[in-house]
Amino acid sequence: METLFLVVRNLKARPVRSLLTLLGILVATASMVLFLSFGEGLRKALSAEMTKFGPQIRVVAEGTGTFGVPNPELGPEVLSTLKAHADELGIARLFPAAVMMKGSGFDPATTFLFYGLPEGITPKDLAPAAKVVAGRLDPHPDGAVVGKQKAEQSRLTLGKTLRLSRKIALPIVGIVDAGSGFANSFIFVPMKTVQEALNTTNYSVILVYVKEGYAADEVAEKIEALIPGVDAQSTTEAVKYAERAIRIGDVIRFGISLIALIVGGLLVANTVMMSVYERIREFGVMRAIGARRGFIFRLVLFEALLLALSGGALGVAAGIAGSQVVNVYTTHAVGLALSAVTPRLVLFSMLVAVTLGMVAGVIPARVASRISVIEALGRV
Amino acid sequence: MKKPILQAKNLTKRYRQGEAWIEALKGFSYDFPPGVTAVVGPSGSGKTTLLNLLAGFDTPTEGEVYLAGNPLHALGEDDRAGVRLLHAGFVFQSWNLLPTLTALENVAFPMLLKGVPAKERTERARALLAEVGLSHREDHFPRQLSGGEQQRVAIARALALDPLVLFADEPTGNLDSAAGSRVLELLVRQAQGERRVVLVTHDPEVAARAERILRLKDGALIEIQERP
Ligand SMILES: Nc1ncnc2c1ncn2[C@@H]1O[C@H](COP(=O)(O)OP(=O)(O)O)[C@@H](O)[C@H]1O
Ligand SMILES: [Mg+2]
Image (tube, rainbow over all chains, first blue to last red; front, side, top):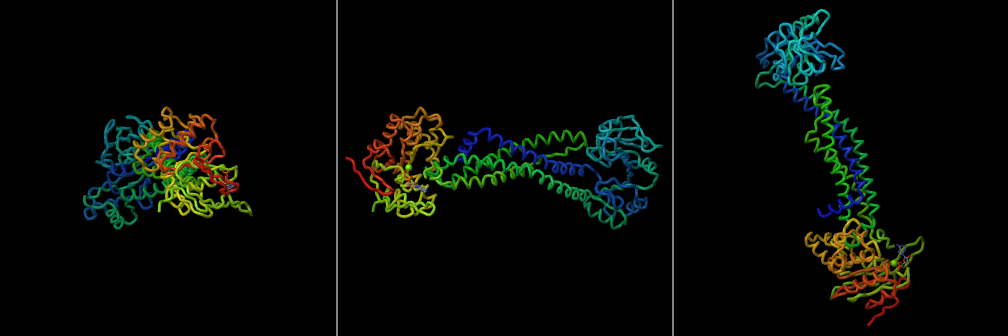
């Protein structure tokens, strides 16, 4: 590109203004990258979560939210029915659990989710990647095994006592790294202890492993058809549901960053327009020598594009740095890297920056290319 | 028939001024022969108007103008620019050079427009700067050059694509007499072979260097003076 060196020369001739404009686009792009990185982070965390979480279906009472804590409303007959039809439904293995939440539910540090597992079932059956960090893996017969992140967050260590109700308390006998954000915030205890604390013989949830060759969402549908009043949630369904929520969030976040982008675009348009007005004589000389309109048009458009592209690239870099800072914080607070700058986000941001440059450059470029030689040179 | 290199036929330019029309150029006809032709006349007599039409900067209200065989009066903006690039060179009174480019790059600029390869451009620009005695100023920017040096760079640039016509509008108007005569000397020297040099001036001493003088008055060509 022969014209590129002319563009660079001109930008260098007004370094402060060029730099300030660059900074404006940098900030606009970086804020967009950072905003949208949350959606990408959630997606990534979600899919990691779903593959690390063992059972493909959780059966809960109707009315439980996709990611909600289920109430103990499944009677023993649900379990026996499922067991009786397991083979024809395509169920490889199933076990019940009783879940109880203590605390506000708002502040993660003072919220406790007790996950009651039946005898013979350990956290490994829920999260196959689980590894013992300290103590032992199995909470049975009368201990509590705490997820690694929960332990850090609420400063729980081996030997401490956890109280489920006024009468019932369990010592911590193990810390486990479940490899997943969900399971890592659970406290695994024997199921009978939770049932005792809740004063029930019901289950909160029945977890189902699907046989090889069966599709989880089809099995879930058959379970719902077989047993009235239950909701069989498959992980694929949950991912779809979450994906929709994230997408809505994306649109809102992009809407907000659009404001910054528009300001950035106006900045480029203003800089380039000013530089066009300052250079009317220059364009006149070029046209007198024999430059065609397209040459001047490209010259000005490239100036806007170069500003937008380099500002955009720097902005993406700044966004990546910002995303890492955010992740240090959210990993500490909720155990998940919430922000991710994926290749497609980088691509999208650069595309937005280029479009910005184009739009901001077209009008000044048109104005510049229409300047007449005699007016430009004051030969009137 | 031979293609006219620089010819005007009944060239007329009228400007509207409110209700009235001003006739800045009235039926100018002339076939410029090779060599230096000066165009003289008092202020407002139509010299700049004539040059604008001959160079294709502007379009005539009536009449025809040919540059290197091309009918400028019938061509659009971009086509006229194309003809200028290949066949005409310009030296204005001031503000000739592109301020963000060095002397060498300014001289190379028309070749860049034409698409001459970079190495060839630089070589030719060096040779041209040497010809006008400015080899030691190759990497200087216009603001670092004196008025006379700037005009000499402009002459070098005007010659970059070896044009058939060289237009100069008051090229010495802003210079002291020493620098002025050096620039004039250079310009006159470029009238070789088929090349036409058109020198617009109101300075009789400058006009005296031309082989013929066209005198304008109120937009009309009133005298053609051939010099021995
Ligand atoms: N764009 C224009 N609009 C109106 N009048 C013009 C314009 N350009 C030139 N003129 C008029 O045309 C006449 C010739 O001007 P010009 O060619 O500039 O003369 P010179 O260069 O000999 O001084 C003057 O009366 C001038 O006022
Ligand atoms: Mg004039």
